[in-house]
Length: 259
Image (cartoon, rainbow, N blue to C red; front, side, top):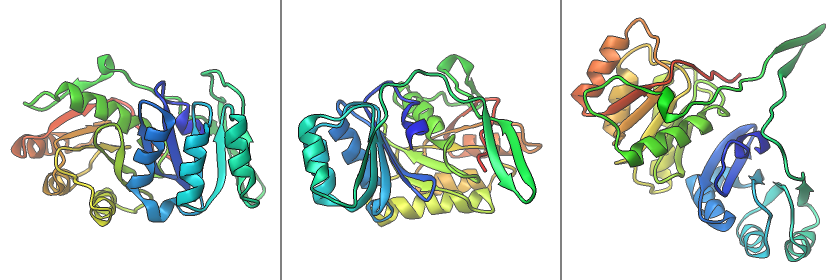
């Protein structure tokens, strides 16, 4: 949760459950960001971990404790009034982490039988200048902003990862499915369950689409723009599918693929 929220310069909130983001949003302040993140998946947010990249204030603390059960809240700082509100909930842990720098740790460690696996941390970031539009239609400015937001979130979702975003807020997250097309379907189901409109939203895929079925599923759901690494042997078919559905698609040239 903390590593994900550090990706954003704007006031941001990340809600994580079982190591996967279930809601992420930015807003004018952290209360607006929390509202956006929570509405993505209120069911999964129950018992989750909530991270902010701004000071936790009283209004936001009150909104959280009055609405949901939460295990942990983490923020760089906490106002006195917010601390008092949280203290009234004996099983809620509040972590004040201090202001961080933008450096990330260099390695990830995985415990295995008889030792550790060590790998480089995924530190990949992209800007609009890094993105290659591969479809006939260019993304709008609003779509491009949401695509970059979406890509930041996908970095922290277990692969196969599909993230739907609209207006700088997640509306559906498909995580950890064995096929990419099913992750896309799960994201759509999540959005439908919360009555969130997918039409006009964008989608991120943490790795390339091996077949066009993922694009067909996205189009059926109402997705209008897609960000993905590219690099499939069938990229031409996937691009053709996007053009067929008038979807704008950009390639990053890098993948996330979190495990």
